[in-house]
Amino acid sequence: MTSKKIKKVFIEGAITPSFIADAIAKHSTKKDIGAHSIFLGQVRNDVINDKEIKAIEYTAYNEMAEEKFHEIREIAFEKYSLTCMHIYHSLGRVNSGEISLFVFTSSKHRKDSMEACTYIVNRIKEEAPVWGKEIFEDESYIWKQNTP
Amino acid sequence: MKIKILAFGILADIFGKSEWTIENIHHTDELKKHLEYLYPRLKSMKYAIAVNLVITSGNFELTDGAILALMPPFSGG
Image (cartoon, rainbow over all chains, first blue to last red):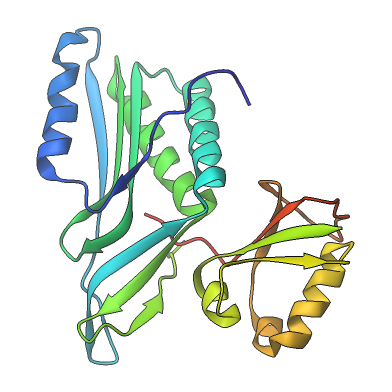
């Protein structure tokens, strides 16, 4: 662990479009940036055995997840030439159609921000100790499985 | 010797609890055997074990006061 401050990643509930808009707006003062890349993960209303998913409830091993997000951030900064990077992930209940993951990378030129964004999303999916419970209309649920 | 156990996702459902303490377990293999005896469904499940925030591999020796997490495959994002 480095001495750098661990940035807050988890947000209770959905990540709102206005939160995302504000995050973009805050970068207008950083005029050396030439490219932003954004990944938004949205809760999908899959139908399983005739029942539609209406929400995902996220839980995490918070302490370990915060360390993992920090590690992913540090490695991405080493690997790519980035001006800045933001990662936000929901905890608790997020309805279908709402945003649960927001990854935002910025660089001078597009290649770094685009590749870093994909890299970070993949590592989060594979390595962050977060679990999604997919809840149907009748409140029954199954545990989410990530696709590779 | 006490070990604190944390269970996540579907494993917390199977155990019916997400946090408890056990005594006199010295290795992760011993714990797995103990839990699989109590909860046979566990035998067919895929899960990782983290000890003090680090994912272990093989039979890992436990020390007093360790925090052990039982984690099914991650499904964030």
